[in-house]
Length: 155
Image (tube, one colour):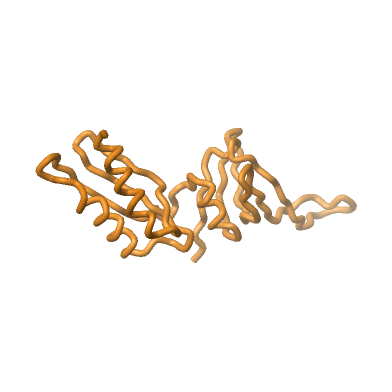
């Protein structure tokens, strides 16, 4: 069993006790720095990071292989990477960059297994007469067409 497989196994065991918390990324550098990034259906608490860190650290032998360990929650402004992240952010505003270069800032209305549905208001010329009117737009986008999606934070 490789070092990475052993770490991943311990990480998964640590996450079993926390079904609302899930792995976003596991990176192990050449110098054996283990970087674990987590997210959760209801966010990630400091205690979640501590518990996962302990599950890994207490079951690895530093005498056998020296390592450092960093367990953190996904940062604000980090791109969404998993379907589960899209589902937990339904109702929030996203900035979605598409593979064709288009960028849409809109409310995430729905996240299915195959695509997302966004809605937003746009100002368009009136069909009859002069001036503009506000119209409600909705678009379904396949995950394959998304280059990057980031939740916007409104203060």
